[in-house]
Structure formats: structure tokens, C-alpha cells
Length: 436
Ligand SMILES: NC(=O)c1ccc[n+]([C@@H]2O[C@H](COP(=O)([O-])OP(=O)(O)OC[C@H]3O[C@@H](n4cnc5c(N)ncnc54)[C@H](O)[C@@H]3O)[C@@H](O)[C@H]2O)c1
Image 1 (cartoon, rainbow, N blue to C red):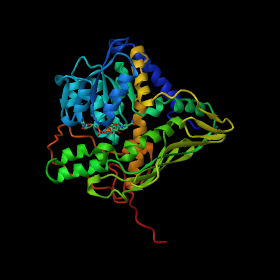
Image 2: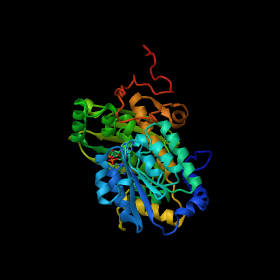
Image 3: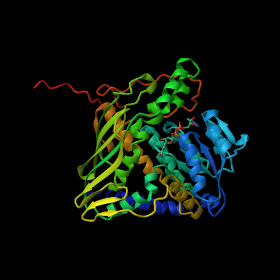
Image 4: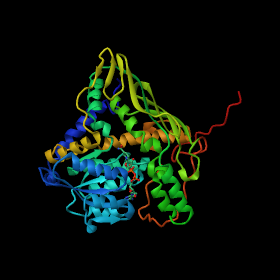
């Protein structure tokens, strides 16, 4: 396979980065949290996944306590508050509530599970506050956010902080064992790959209720957007970024490389009601990996359609589902234990904090997030572009305003129209049509 990144393969690059982080990890900050001391966790974003991650984290290891909570809304925080008996003085409400959790000295780790649009500033603040971090995916929704996140992830390494991301397949035994074999050549040279997150509708009732409350004036524009974040591009990054990142990340893992160019299509065919914000409901993306190896990524959220959440990698000697099956010259099926990956990711994080052999998945999850963002922007604009060009030229900045308030009036960007939608900082795709 052709080498990239100045002749360094991605595996070599990551290995080098891990080594340097491990060395940095012997500093003062790391010493503070290492050993068998209690891990005192603050949960930022106490919705479905924040609550699940809190439980997974406590289940994963001895000596873990949930000690502080932050959420934009009091009604979302109540469940965890009661479940873990978190005292009132450690429960904070509002868009800035995360700052109060981060200011607590007795919190040494945080779970970041707010909508992805808020992630870059919250992650950077958590690093500045010297906390170990479990961050849900995706970690940004725009190139500007990716830059903020990557800079903070590198700083976390320098400060001796651990970072684990909620791309749980990376901690799932069947995937881990399959990837080892793929990297060792079990399917030969990779020739192509496919990945899918195709499903039916979701958040139908929630979208209806949120819309009714906005229409009746109970919710401001901003409150509606934050509560309805899944359907708001600047908060979720669209479903290719919010959900399909899992599968794109698996394909990056199999190649041990990032795609070099992208060409996408997509649209909004079923979920056209305004209550569904400004995102698409289907995408089909062609990613080209080093040596121009083409892959297909497909995602859809449309009621009444077939479910398919999977990956497939095809090589010169066979193919693999990536999750425990290899067929071909070296057929193999995983039969080992399969601990819950949602728990395992916390087991690995806490073990890494306690041993001082710090995990830092920050750059890796940011790179996979970037791939999903590139796919989305290619589909919105119907532009085909290289990753290097996108990274150096695209100025799209959807980061939340520093002084954002829930009471703010806010207009929503229109649903992108392919061919009309213009990528900030990149040349127009509109060309005068040749007549013959
Ligand atoms: N790894 C996985 O399999 C998986 C599964 C589901 C969700 N997720 C991810 O977890 C994150 C949360 O998703 P969810 O399903 O829990 O959504 P959710 O809406 O149930 O929870 C999000 C919570 O964040 C709160 N919030 C919003 N803005 C905030 C802010 N600025 N500060 C503090 N709190 C804020 C909301 O009030 C809500 O309680 C997303 O990034 C999502 O992609 C990951």
C-alpha cells in the first residue's frame, strides 16, 4: 500500500504518537490521578447516552463515583441526580453549566455527552481544567471545530490526560480481533469496502412535541434547536456525522488510513416537515483511500425501510465483516468472550488512567469525524474534492457563539440544495454548461 503522511503509515504514526503520549504521561498531572484512587466523574449532558455512559463507567471498574452533573435543562438532569444521589450543590443547569462542573477540584474525569456541536469548546475547556475525558462521538460538526478539538487533544497528551471516545467498536473484542487479522494480511491487500447505517425513523414523537412547544411560544428558537438538536445541522452535524461516523471509523481502521478524496450524493426526501430541522435523510458517499481504492458509505433514516448497520472489507485473499468473520483463504470466526463494548471502553479508560499508560483517542476520533463532515459537505454541494484541499481551504465554522443563551432568537440555515449550496472558502462547483 502506498505510504502517506511523509512516508509514514497511519499505524506507524499512531504508534509514535502513543509512545510520546505515554512518556509525557509520567508528568505531574498524570501522577495526580494514577494509582487506585477514586475516579470522581462529572457528567456533562445527562440525556440518553450521558446517563448510559455514567452507568457503564460505574459498572466498568471499582472505585468510580458519579459526583457532579451538568445539563442545559433541569428536567434532563433529574434522572441521574436521583440515581446517583448527587447533591444539589453539584448539579448545574444551563448552557454554561459545564464550566461549573469543570471548576470542581474533586472531579478528576468527565463524560462529555452533549450534542456534538458543543463538543469542541467543552472538550477544550475540560483539557484546560486538567480532567481525564470520555467523549462521545462525533467530536465536532465543522472543520473549525475539528481544529479546536485536535489542538486540545494534543494538549491533553502534553498534560498527561487520558481521552477515550465513544466509538465503542474500537473496544469491542470481535472487532479488535478481526482488525488484528486484517492488518496481519488475512484478507490480503484491501481492494474495496462498504459500510452502512441504514435505518427507519427516529425521534418522531420528540420532534413533534418540540415543534408544538416552539409554535406555541413555550420554547424560544434556541431552546427548540438545542432540544431538537438531532435535526439541526450545526448541533448534530447531520446523521452521517452523528451516527454513521461509527461505520466510517471502522473502515478507516481497516485501511489504517484516511480517505484522500470524497464524492457524495444525498437528499431530504421523506423527512421534509420543518420540525425535522435542516438535515438530509439519506447519503451515499464514495471515499477514495490511498492507491485510489474506492469504498461506498451509505446511510439513511427513513420510516418503513430496511435496517442495515454493518461494514465489509474485500481483499485479494478474502473478505471480512470486521466484527468477527473472515471468509476466504484464511476463514476465521471469533468465538471468544464479548464484553459489552459500552462498558469495555470505560474499563480501558480507567485502567489507562490508573496504570499511567494513557490512552488518547482524540486525534483519531477527530479524523473520523472529519471524514463524515467531508462526506456531508460533498453531498450538500455535489462537489468532489480531496481531503487535503478541504482541510486547507474550507472555512465552514458552525461553532456555537460564546455567549449563546437559551432565550436567544435564532434563524435556521436553509436545507442545503445541491448545486446551489456553496462550501465556504471553496470555489463554486457551478460551471457554464458546454453546448456540445
Ligand atoms: N456511542 C454511541 O453508540 C452513541 C449512542 C447514542 C448517542 N451518542 C452520542 O451521545 C451524544 C448525546 O446523545 P444522546 O442520545 O444522549 O442525546 P440526548 O438529547 O438524549 O442528550 C443530550 C443531552 O445534552 C443536553 N445538552 C444540550 N446542550 C447542552 C449544553 N450546552 N450543555 C450541557 N448539556 C447540554 C441536553 O439537554 C440533553 O440532556 C451525541 O453526541 C450522540 O451522537 C452516542
